[in-house]
Each structure stands twice: as C-alpha cells, then as structure tokens.
Length: 451
Image 1 (cartoon, rainbow, N blue to C red):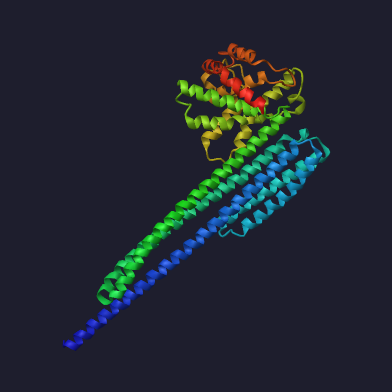
Image 2 (cartoon, helix red, strand yellow):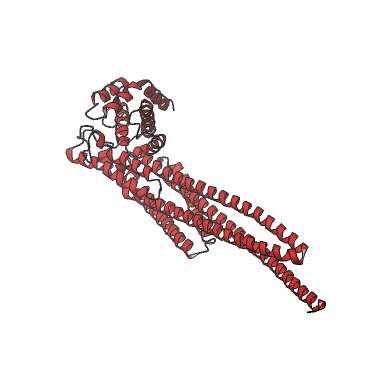
C-alpha cells in the first residue's frame, strides 16, 4: 500500500468521521429544538386550561352567592338587583364553560369537560326550578332537596376539576419523563459527536460542547417551570376546596336563618369549639387525638353541625311551643340526615380526615354521655370526641340564646346547667374545662354582641 493510497484512506475515514460528527450535531440541535417546542406548547396549553378552570370556579362561586343572597333577602328592590346580577353571572358562567372547551386537546380531557358541562347545566336548571318556585311560594317553602341537589352538582363540578388537575399532573410527569429521555439521548449523541469531531474538526468539538452545556442549563430551566406549574396546580386545588367550604357554610347559614337565628350561633359555637379544644390540648386531655391539624379541621367542620335541619319543616323548626312526640321524632332525623348530606356534599374532597370529622360532628352532636341521646344511642368514649366537644358548645349557646320557644338564660345560669349535666349529657372532663373558661366564654359573647 503506497503513501497516497494510505493518505486517501485516512482522508476518507476522517471525512466520514467529520460527516458523522456534523450529522450528529445537526441531530442534536434538532432534538433540542423539538424538545423546546413540545414543552413550550405543553406549558402554554396547561396554563390556558388551568386559567379556564379558575375562571369557571370563580363564576360558579359568584353565581351561587347571588342565588343565596336572593333567597335570604326580604327587600324586593334588593331582590331585583340580585336577580339582574344573577342573569349576568349565568351568562359569564356559560361563556367561561365554552371558552374552556376551546382548549380541550385529548379524549380524556373531553370526557372530563363533558362531565363539568353537564354538572353546570344541571346546577343552572336546579336554580331555574328554585326561582320558578319562589315566584309562587315563600322562600321558606322551597323543597330542601333542591338545595341538596345544588350542593351535589357543585361538588360534582369540583370533583371533575380535581380529576382534571390530576390528569394535568400526570401529563406534566409524563412530559418530564420524556424530556429526561430526550436529554439522555442528547448527551449520548454529544459524546459521540465530541469523539468524532475531536479527530475530524476542532470547530465541531467546540460546537458540540457548547450545545451540551446549553442543554444542561435548559434542563434546569425546564425543571423550575415544572415545579412552578405544580405549585400553581396545588394553589388551584386549594381554591376549589375553599369554594366548596364557602358553599357548605352558605348552606348552613341559610338553614340557620330558617331557624330564626341571625348567624351568630354558627360563629359563637365555632369559637367555643376552638376554645375548648385548644384548652383541652393545653391540659393534655385527649392529647392523642387533639393535634393541631385535628383542631383546625374540627373548627372548619363545626358550622355544619346542624346542616341536617334542611329536612325539618318550618312549622316544626319554628314552633313556639313544645314539640309533640311525632314532631320531635321528625326533628331528631336532622342528625342522621346531616351526616348523609355531609358525605354527599364533600364527596369531591380528598381530605378523608376532614370528611370524617364533619360527618361525626353533624351526626353525633346530640348523643349523651350516658347513652340517652340520638341517633345511635352511643355513650361515653364511643361518641366521637369531635361530637362531644360540639355538644357542649351547641347546648350552651342554645341556653344563652332567645329562641321561638324560650327566652335567653343568663350566662351564669347556663354554665350551671352545663355543670349539672356533666356525666349524664356531657363528657365530665370537657365540662370541667369549659366551666373553668367562663371568662373567655363571656368575651366571645360580648364580642358577638358588639358586632
């Protein structure tokens, strides 16, 4: 083999290596461009979808608030204003629902969207039935199951939004996995290009190293965007839970107004519950249960304790005299019905501990320590702690409040009655703590009276 032939062969080998290196660089650049384009498109679509869900949630909460305000007010002029604003809110809700549809890209998203749309339509249809009924009847005569269905449809919307958020999170995770695979392939390509171009072209080596460095920087940038997106999705889920809580509290307030209360009972009993639970925790009573997170959920669930009264007719709920045996049996049903309603309305909430506490508070707050309560006849520690705390707060506030069937008792007399019922109606340990806090209790009462 002569020198010229050897040189030619070396030249051909170097040329082929150079071509392979340049081809590898081009493929690497194409892979980076494709990765960038796909991820930017995905981020943009996720942002638009999240924004659409947030808009629907706000419009839904705005409309539901207007409906509740319309039903609560007795001022005809104010009713007209709420009715006018409700029409605008209804159109905004439908408009945002249509806008949401324009950003649907997959069959899975389409299926969830259809569920949202049907739930919204059912909710609006239920509102129409309530408004039609109000035109010929008093608001107090509205069928209780209408409000239940409103809550169920709202919960269904929130549940489907949770499903959509889960789908988006899965898509983000899948996008990140693909991105890491592309980066791995790009790194391998960069190594091959570097080896080939090191022999063939020094310029190619510089370009390849530069691209690899840029890719690592871009990977860090993309990971930051993923973290930010996940935080935004978590914040969105928290807003949805807040909307659901506000819906439940709005229903509880409406029910309380049927009982001729002004809204103070819900606020005061919640304050008593928080005061009693924190003091018991401080003294080490039931320390294994009364954690900070448990107390936080208990206070949040307290307003729902009488939500079951939505099934009690007004003629019983507002009767000025003593209830008959038959009427009292109807009244007693509100405890078990309250638990059922809580399960249905909060069905879309992922926090099982919150649902369990809300269920116990609404179902068992009329149980007695000696077993003579209802609906299950539980006694002593078989009664959930949340319900035992709620029982003390609820009965005390009922004693100090004027009702259609009685005058208000003085605070000292009410505390004396609570003390006398320790060991029969109430948990003795909780009763002792509650009596000891009479000064703090009077501050709560005074604060509410000053409003």
